[in-house]
Image 1 (cartoon, rainbow, N blue to C red):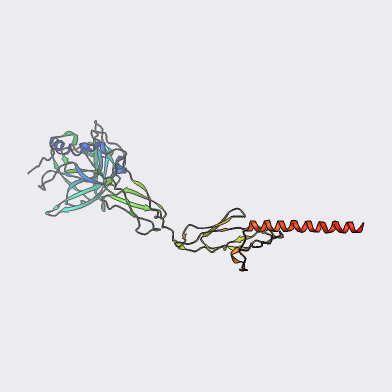
Image 2 (tube, helix red, strand yellow):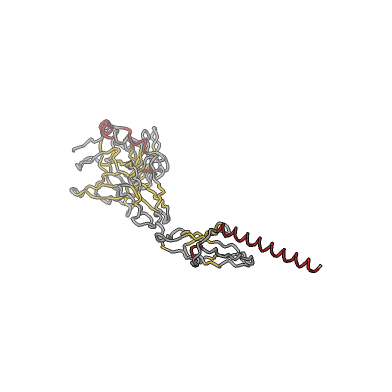
Length: 405
């Protein structure tokens, strides 16, 4: 009979401590929130080589396989090697605690109820592997002693002979099998244990990634909003919200990734369009309409209302200035007259206008054969003639007066 002793605590510690013991801190309250996935690692394992030897035969009694986890962790599954003799497919595999004086807890630990499945070995149909899966992921602590309680009776035929389990003799009393007799648990007659494997579910730490910032490409045409460029980055999902002049982009990590605590993950982007320059329209001002002044009223000017032109009137009545100015979006052609000046004063009427007699030009008189006398001489002659005439007239009057006497 060949026996294989597979359990070596020192070897297990050397191979598992670097990975498993380091995971103790991972199983914190925050781990479940950030872990995107997990991997299954072996906490401890006793490998059956398939050689028929000593076995634990059962006849309806439950048995308990003690173990102590090599590290604290979350239980994923336990496998047990089973002989396929008889009806070996059993249903119940639970995890309980066991004290130092071998007292087994009455109830399983929270989440410690496993669901079993079976698979025969491809190269040996007389051997099967029973796997108990714990979907509730119970927490196991290093230093605490537990037991795997198995009810080996067939699920479909509980009164039939139960499954048989190959055994290994490790000499470790902490792993010595215990069986139930009625309501009492006691040691098995052989100080050994069955072949089993314990697997933990270890969260895989997320890969850290820093989200890239989105950018904006301005539109090539005025009046059109710019476009947002979302980065294409492994492990990052970008979501754009908003359709106005401002949009918000938010980055979230995908499964298996995480952002640093100080990473910027939200951006507000300005995508407003550039303002188009105004369209310039050519327009020509019209000359103001003048109403002439009269003797009764001053004159006035009026302007024609035109799109794009503002007319202003300044100055006084005697000098009224009308100016045309192009409004925004309009312009005047070159050399356009834009200013007019008017005298709107009331006319002064009824004042006589003196008649002006032109003085003859000596050079225009007719030639009488008499030389022209300078004007000064002519005046003297005229004055002398007038004096003589006056004297003669006075003499005549005086004579008439004497004769009347």
